[in-house]
Each structure stands twice: as C-alpha cells, then as structure tokens.
Image 1 (cartoon, rainbow, N blue to C red):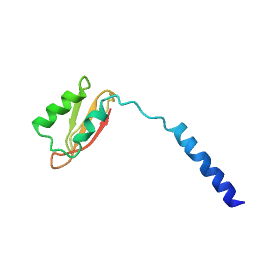
Image 2: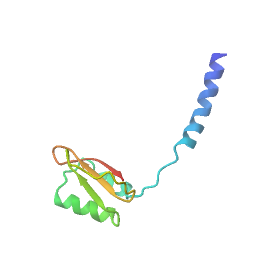
Image 3: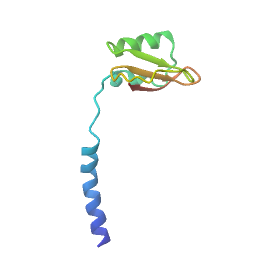
Image 4: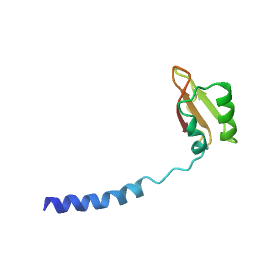
Length: 92
C-alpha cells in the first residue's frame, strides 16, 4: 500500500510544481546579457551590457557597496565579485 500512495504522490508533484511556479517574464533582458557572467567588468563589457539591456537601466554593484532597496523589475542588477568579475545578474 505504501508504494501505491508514494507513486500517486509523485505523479501529482510535477503538475503541482508547474502550477505553483509560472515562468517569470524577462523584464530586464537577462536572457541576452547572462552570457557575461564571469567576465571582467571592463569598459568594453560595461558598454556591451548597457547596449544589450537597453532600454533597461543597468546598476553595477560592487562588494560592500550600499544600494537602495527600491525595486525596478526593468533594471538589470550586475553584482561584481572581489576581483571585479560579474558574479550574478538579476532583474530588480
């Protein structure tokens, strides 16, 4: 009996997961810019990201830098690591 209940629960889980987590829209052009993760944030890379993200604004965030807590779904946040490389990018 346990196996049948477990199998039934597994059969329902993917459907539930699909309903609970709809794909979020790409509001800051992340799909076009994410290939730069890991790149050094030199002037050429910064220009390329601004061009690809346009018309979305780009915010560069260095380690320890104070940032505002406002949220702008259209803004591309580029988070740098200690070596000046792009560690993460996200909308907000």
